[in-house]
Length: 310
Figure 1 (tube, rainbow, N blue to C red):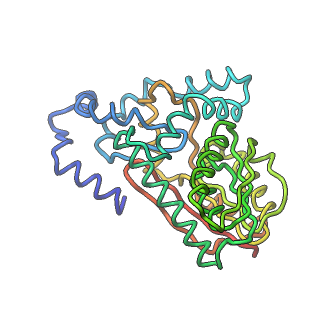
Figure 2: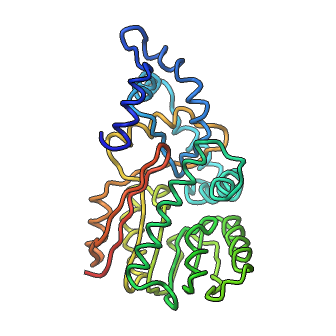
Figure 3: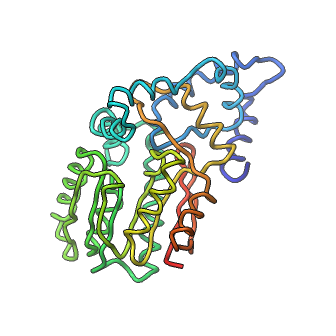
């Protein structure tokens, strides 16, 4: 445990949130009830609870009795057994309203959602900075796979990139298109309108100078992530930029605890991925990692890799 994680744990301990000699795990959970009410607003399709050691201990016994996976299975069954269709249904429904607010500018978000917004914005800014360092994007073709509401697509298009933006949810692509039009209407002379399409990652075709895929791998289990990374690499000519929630003992534990407090609108599984597995898939596809970064806030964490042909 280090960095923000250590600071979080130290702060919680210094605030006397863990009087272990007096409280059982059940009592700890009660002490954290107010915090967990706020945490229940987190959508674990893209984020993981990150509240430090005391919360982890508080949820330990509950792990033995609650089964959040059952809810995921029910949602997948409702989509005919197709997990990706379950994801699409979520982001075309309740999930769309939630993430439209989080990735927007509205003040109608709580501090957890605001933290997620800020963390995602940092990841997007890192990608834009990398691309500027590599010579900029004007006139280059970019595939933004899993574009969401356009957080990365829009600034790329405004800088003159020819962007092909896709998302598994049609409502997301509609919102991204609307946001682009609003931004372009301000008179940006270098802007090129993106091509927006509703499709999953496996359906994307073509060749692009740059392929980006931010915070999408969390919807792909390990047995599919390898082939997905290789498919994305096959679409790129010059560079591939991808982010994912890293699989570590610390994050895996906190993710599991967060799932105990799911909230009514959270219907998708969240998968963490070991960095060495992602890098191995890139190497097997003939690519090598040349840059790596980590964005970690209280409620958002994302490992970012940039790869080029080896």
